[in-house]
Amino acid sequence: MNPETAAATGRVPHGGSDDETLIDFSANVNPECPSDTVSVYESAFETARRYPDDGYGEFRRAAADSLDCDPERIVPTAGGLEAIRLAIGTTVDAGDSVLVPAPSFGEYAREVRLQGATPDFVAQDGVLDADPAGRALAIVCNPNNPTGDAYDHDELRAFAERCRAAGTTLLVDEAFLGFTDRPSMAGTDGVVVARSLTKLYGLPGLRAGFAAATGDELGRLENARRAWTLGAPAAAVGAHCLRQSAFAETTRRRVDRERERMRETLDDEYDVRPSDAPFLLVDVGDCDVDVLVARLRERGIAVRDATTFRGLDSHVRVAVRTSAENDRLLEAMTDV
Image (cartoon, rainbow, N blue to C red; front, top):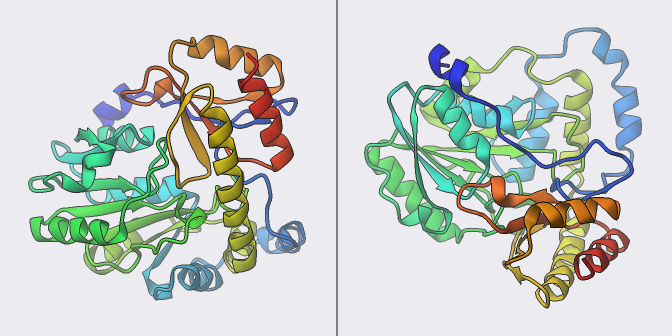
């Protein structure tokens, strides 16, 4: 990390509310988590009294099984964001150029700048058509946050091939891919995949995730990762959750059904973008975003002010939650 840019690079806004009186639609987190998660966490307490096994064999196997790849290709991290930082930190040098989608997750550009490199922004819906030549790294968020677009797998693989031919590493953030039935890019040469347990399994405070890579990229990630990167409870709960395929499938069906219902209702009042993710990007038009966010908060609902994303100036992002909670949001947003 570059000391000068670290001193000059501020933090970026995120969703999420710590006000327990609000229904939080500002963070794209599953309101449910797998059964027995609490008991697994409690059972792991005693193991937290000693250093965890830094090999994380069970966690790696569960992660690999979830993506149908080799366990040796899994690098445990404390959340998906640490996987992103590790990928950028082991690939990008000061003065490099990095292909960054926009609008998209603000931490990509921040991490690039922390390395003393320059984010070269490209429209997120055109990122697969961009020329990766001359860049140290290209980044794709699949599905993209906050637009919800998922990329065609064949087109993404073709872009990965162009990146590999250009000597450019490709980082694919798959934080929301588990909400779809699309295949992962894990195991693809020249590609680093970042995954998080935060979203699909409803555990943002656990801080568990992983990267998947091959070849030189894998070697750099494994060498550079911190020792004991996952606490013992996080590793145990993470391995448990990653094996709950029925829970993941039930979640996907619920999100698909509720997201479409929400989109159809909100589209009568606003311009709502189609989405493959557990959230919707809503263009509120002439309605003042600050006023809308404040009025919804008065009614016990937190939504994400999406104007903090690059290129958006009249948008909010709303997560898909339970049916009853979604009803509350729809009533409030169509009556403000």
